[in-house]
Amino acid sequence: MKCTLIVTLLLSAVALAHPTAHARRASAFALQNGQDAIALNNKFKTLKEGDPCQTGENACIDQKFAQCIGGKFVSQPCGAGTICAALPLVNSRGTSITCTTQSDVDRRIAATGATGPPPGNDGGNTGGNTTTAATPAATPVATTGGNTGGNTGGNTGGNTGGNKNVANDGGNNDPQTSLTLDPAVIARGFAKDGQEVPTPGQVPSLTSTNNFINFCLTAKGVPITDGKQIKTGSCNPAPIGLIPATTNMPSCKFVFPKNNDVIDENKPFKIQLRVSKLETGNFVNAQTNYFAAPQQLNQNGQVIGHSHVVVERITSLRQDTPTDPNVFAFFKGVNDKANAQGILTASVDKGLPAGVYRLSSIIAAANHQPIIVPVAQRGTLDDAVYFQVKKQGGQN
Image 1 (cartoon, one colour):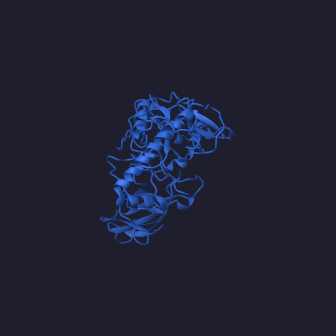
Image 2 (tube, rainbow, N blue to C red):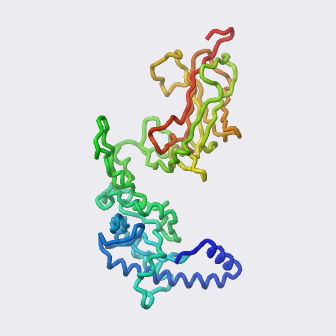
Image 3 (cartoon, rainbow, N blue to C red):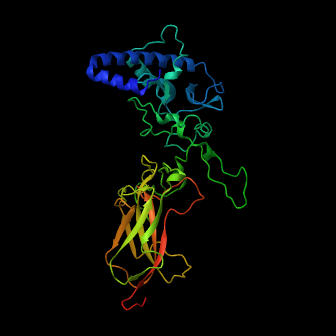
């Protein structure tokens, strides 16, 4: 039974005015949810791999989590010690399908007071009330993908969008604290190496059927980044995160200095950088949370982050050898929000010695990682200009 927003608001208002009546209603749907969960679990016993289904439909087959792929059920094992089952929701009408323990199934159904399917109800009418819950899945983080056969990435198709309404009803199935991979987020394409249509010079990609969740185990002796700036190298397990649309790719341009500007030696000046489509002013502790969380987007679909500016001295405007990233004349993380004109400012309080310089921007997500965008063919997100600093009297 689907609930509209209006009905939800009305029920909430009634609950505030008549808490006892609300409790009676909650008790009533709890019992029905328990009966529906029992009926669904009985129905699941009759299903088998490859049975026909509707896109977006989920089920349990032989205690495995199953999704409808191409009109047929495809299943993959749950995590070690868990089974797939239907559970009654606690705070709303309906059921959830998730990987959990048998004891958790028994406990939750018993809490509703249900002891068997209601008379005449064989579970066929409960599907409309079933939401796919947080579904801890086949590959525990502590293992190295022994379940890859069942997890061949093919299970994101019909269900990824639907799982935005995750039914976490107060149990131990929160996908954000679970140590197992939810089948709904397995990326099917990761199992391909890209060489299905070979292109000259193209190399095969690494492949994975469990989203590379244990990739860092392949780098023997390499420490986990763990939020630190490890100068000797490390392996970072955090996912990339949210990627903006092409219409929200950030960009920037220096307002001052401009290309070929000439500045007086040792004279304070302000670097000005105009930024678009980036929610500036967001940065985390770079000593403890470096690269430690996925990229995030704001409500407008723009990357949440900040910027840096760096000035490097070069030998001349015609230098064609790469610079050393470890050597720079000035660096500043610009942690403020851009002004009304979209401009960020960094003060070079002591100015610079006479010479030739390259000024570059480094825009970043909140956890300091380079910004990830959706396409390879695009303009650069950052800007760079070259300027000169002259000695008193006009000589560089």
